[in-house]
Image 1 (cartoon, rainbow, N blue to C red):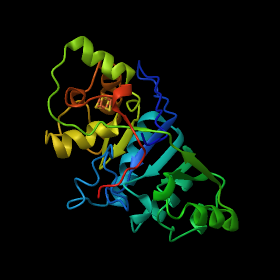
Image 2 (image 1 turned 120 degrees about the vertical axis):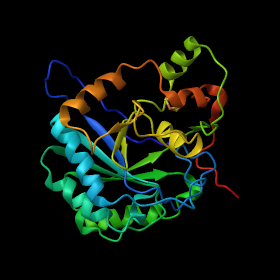
Image 3 (image 1 turned 90 degrees about the vertical axis):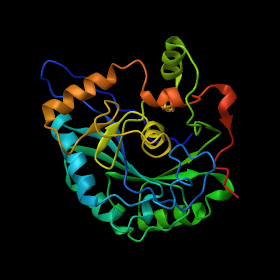
Length: 266
Ligand code: SF4
């Protein structure tokens, strides 16, 4: 399982400002790897994958900040974030917004960033996924981070889960609730393409594999076309759900679904 700085914790109600600590935003669906069990189906969607317009990224995070007040940490990722031609413009914007305390750039350590200067900031941490042999530029990235005075951390992963199936799974309400409750991927509040949601797999599973409408589905909160009051209420509703629609099409994260890290499609 990719560690995506998953925890977003909110305290809301009574018109109070929501308190959110951590959030992640996917700024591109394009990736330099072809992981067989990618939780966002990147190899399956490679032909139609796109970069998100940075203005959409700014507007979505801005609207969420207007709703919740501040973020302790915002993680920026992909796909592979350094493939986005304007990733550094978004990082600069995040640094300049004082409501965001820390900015984490999560990379699969296969691409050398085009701009080190923008990362030379106390707010920024370069988070390097260590997928073993697959993370080809890891040593080089560490050396460059040291040379350029950029904060960095390395994340070694022991296992992932195969949650890539997308057929309807026969199960009782109780089984669905338990699957969601014990899921090790859920809790990953993220933003993709202007929508806020709880689980990265749920967004890409429903949008591309099950092909359900994202618009109008209460598991995906449209940040761009609602006011902050409506967004706050939608977050409350989604936080209180017993399971997501996507869980009906998902094997979940039981031990039997544990797999090796970043196996590549041949
Ligand atoms: S069980 Fe539900 S919450 Fe967990 S990965 Fe699958 S869709 Fe996401």
